[in-house]
Structure formats: structure tokens, C-alpha cells
Image (cartoon, rainbow over the protein chains, first blue to last red):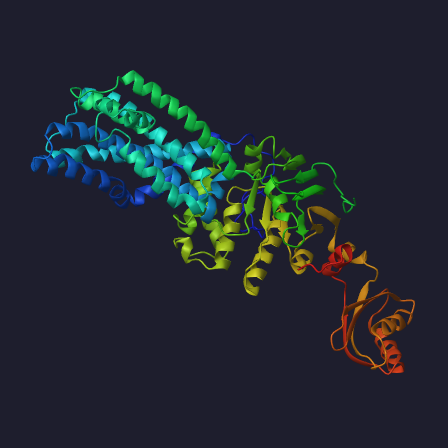
Length: 277
Length: 332
């Protein structure tokens, strides 16, 4: 019995001869397609969710304060790269943390994907890749919006490769940090942890100020150096506002790669702990 | 341990050998050294109370729980050594619905097949066929949130079949379903067997185990206490039939004396158990012969003690009785 429908048995096809090794690559692409498919249907809510906060940040600090004379127009040069870095980083972080807590602890919807024929670690990697895609979309949308809010956009085509590279790197770090939080924190504590983690990340990521200018506030400079977001902001600033003091690109790349390795390992450990008993 | 007369010991669909699972920080093993084999095309039931280790056993076999020691294989694949291949040959109908609520019912089926590498045309064809077979035709476009418990259970069964697995695991398949939905699920399980699929189900419902399973393994506290066909398990009890009687005994008589009198009534009474003693006495007689023929002698014996027979029920011994005799406890 190889085909079925009219057959009395409730069966599409008997798995008679044992198939070979399953196609892991196809399974991975199908998982990714599922996430993209679901997001595609709710693109507008998704964009509102991730873009609204940075847009207001940009508008109030980059436009309103400048118009009122409390900040100079150079300040928007400092702010814009930071806000784009923030958008990518936090979008990625939130996209791995919250859904995983809900999936693992309450709906268990992820179980069907954990039973797909691919290694458990690749299910985690798919989540990270998907978070990266969402973060890049959010960051990309920020460029035209910034142009609309500020009236200028200090980006040239030649900046794109480096900007893309650091947005990818920064989003990956955000995604693995999010997965680490989402898999290690107890579900009933996740709201508290987010409040305690997100706000400091938001304000110590050198998004609203250049890191090197913190010389006079040494302890805060040290704190900011521990936040991976600092290196994304600084790298983007190097491209978009070269006149503002910034960390060298190579240093940003090394720091982000280091964070990626550390949190990459912790996120895989955390995911495995939740996926397997 | 009796493995129930396995006819084809070679090439079983499921093989479990000395399986142990201990969760970190727990004082006892959740699964404590069990071994059994399920033949291809067989419906195998694991029967036991909650906490017996059934779900953990299924968890190991479906690659979601890592065994502490021992070996387990499904469709010829070692689940611990090669979980990826094992997952392509098995599927799971979980105890609690875990449908993808961001998708419609039909999309749940189609995406599941896509995860398993089934081609686009084929997975669409299978989804439509299975929705129809499970009585969900026309409801495929609904969000799964709108599904009732019974419909969700049917959709879970359909999803489990989308990648043509060789072994299907059903964890408490009818828990929480109304009687009609339960019968529907039972019929589908029989159809699975007719289609040549091996089924391993867990249940704490002895009716379900006895009705559906070719063989039943009885589990308690992580151990497999007995394993055989439902008929052979009940035959292993002291008697082949039971007679439950309610007695209103004389005021000066004692329950023990009445039981003793009943036990000595005939050779055919193999065992007498006091089931309950509230206002009256309720006893269960395990018999080797015809239960109906003994009702008269019992009544006379009681009359002689000035006791009154107030209720009689003749029964075949059930798996519940087997569990009772193995553990000294009721199943639930």
C-alpha cells in the first residue's frame, strides 16, 4: 500500500522501507519559512511594535530638543546611529526571549518543531536567524523614517556594507542574549527580569552619547563598555557620523564577536535544557 | 519478565532495554529499569496511574527525554544515538494539545509535513485527505483556537500522520474527551493498526487499555509489573469470573465470619475479598467456574446465617482487578 486515500486504514502511506537520513536542510528552511509566513501576515503590527519607540526617541531628542534650542543640530548626528543600533539590537533580543518563554512554558507550540527531523541546536539557530531577519527589517525601516523625521540622512551607498555587517553582528548578539534570558529565567519572573534588564541595556548602550566622551564619568564608561549595544552604536556612528569621536571598527568587531561566542554558547545550553528533559 | 509470547522477536518496532530515567534532584527513578518490545503493526498499551512513568517512557522513546541508562530504539533507530532519524520515523499525539495557534488547522498539517521534507503537492494532498478522514473537512481554514477539545484531538492525530510515520505514540489519547469523541478516537486507533502502523499508547483507563491494545504493560512507580494480552492478564487472576455481593448480615455476626463461610462454600471459590464494609458488607468472590450457578448456594449460605443477600453482580475480571492484585491499590 503506497497510496492511500480510499484505503480503509487511516494512513497516508505506510512507511515500509526505511528511508535514509532525513533532510536536515529542508527541515531548517521549513521552520524558517513558518516564522516568516506568520510574521508576513502581521507585518504592520510587527513594525508598529518595534519602530514606535525609536521613532519617538528620535523625534523628541533629535528634533524637538533641537528646535527648542536645548540641543544642537550635531546631537542628532550622535543620536541617529545609536537609535538604529538600538532598534536592531532590542528587536532581536525581544524576539528570542518572549516567544520562547511562552512556547516552552505555556502553549508548548514549539514541541512540533522540536520533533522535526533536525538537531535540537538547529531549532535554536533557526530562532536566532529569524530574530536577525526581523531586526534587519526593523533597522531598514528606520532609515526612511529617520530621513522623514530629521530631514537628512547621513548615509552614503558606500557605507552600506559596513553598516549591514555591524547590524547583522549586533542583531545576532541581541538574539542570543534574548535566548539566554528566555531559557534561563523562570517563566513567572520574566516580566521582572525584563524590566530590570531592558532599561539598563537601553541607557548604557551608548545610543544617546558617544562612548569616548564619557571620560569624565569613568565608572559609567566602564558600565557602558560591558553592554554589547555600545559596540553596535559606536560602529554605526563611525560610519554615519565619522566626525563624532568613536571606537575603531576593529575593536567593535572583536568585542561583538566575543559577546556572540559567550552568549551563543549560553543560549544553546539554555535552549537544550528547556527542549530536553 | 514475561514478554507476552513475542511471535517475531526480530526487528521489533519499539525496543526498550533496562531503561532508567532519574530526573536531577529527585530521590527516586521516574522510570526504573523497564524492558519491553512492541512488534510491528501492534497496538501496545502502557497502563498505570498518574506518575507511574508512562509519559516519561514515551518522552524517551520520542527523543524529548534523555535516558539516564539503558537503551531504547524506535523503528530500528537508537533514539539517544540518532534522534534526528528517529524523529522522521515516529510521531506523537501529545496529552495536551500543542497545535500551532498562529496557523489554521490545515496549515498545521501542511507545515508539519514541510518540517519533515514532504513535497508541496504531496503535503497538500495528504492534508486534504486526512482532514476529510478525520471528519474535519470544511473546517481546515479555521483557526485552531476555534476548535473543540475533540476536534483538536482529531487534528493532532491527522498531524501525526502527515509524514507517514512507522510508529505513532499516543499519550492519554482520550483524557478529557466526551464519550462520543472518545469512541471516535478509538476507531481511528484501530484504523491505524489496520493501516500497518505500530501504536504505543499510554492510559490510566483500563477500558481503553483492554479495548484497544493487543498487549498491555502495567506500570506502577516506574516499573513494569506485568505484560501480556488483556485476556491473558485477566486469566492470571485467581479466578476466571467474579461475583460481587452485597450482604446485610445478622447483628451478632461478623464480616470475617461471613467471608469465611463463603470461602468454604465450594471448591470453585478461589478467593474472597472484602471490598467495602459500610452499613452492610460488600465482597468479591473470585471463581473458577460459572458465577451464575453459585448465586443460589451463596444466598442459601447467607440465609443460614440469618443474613440477607441485597445485591449481586456477576463480572469478568478486568485489568483493574489485575492492577489491584499486583499493587494492592485501585488504579485511580
